[in-house]
Length: 48
Image (cartoon, rainbow, N blue to C red; front, top):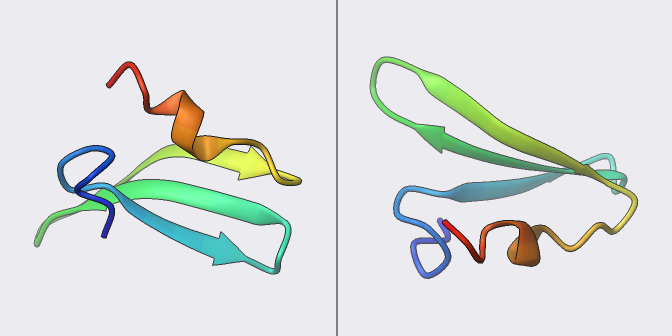
């Protein structure tokens, strides 16, 4: 959980190449963005 960046935000790495930013409820998972190769995902949510 990364509530410090955005309420409900979750971040998970996949195969050491992709970072997946998503939110989840009991009913659905919403993928917000995919970041490849070390992109700065924190900066992408600065405006949120």
